[in-house]
Amino acid sequence: MGRALIGLGIVCVIAGLALEYGARLPFRIGRLPGDVYINRNNTIIYFPIVTCVLLSVILSLVMWLLNRR
Image: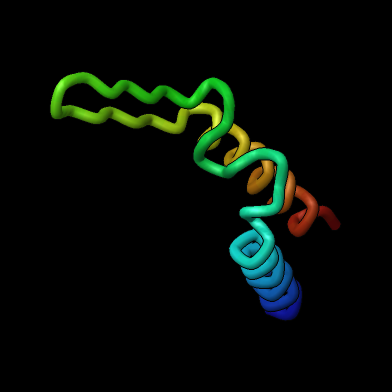
């Protein structure tokens, strides 16, 4: 239970820092190269494929580190 709370705290700190300083980063989460953005007539289609892959890799790494014994 203790490790889960520590992990949750670290995730909250990282999320807070990303929200506070995200505009100053050289890249925008959700606007990475490779994200699909189509704007035609009155229709906008946006699918953040690279952002999804990046978040999946980061979360998998965090979970792997927390579950190591």
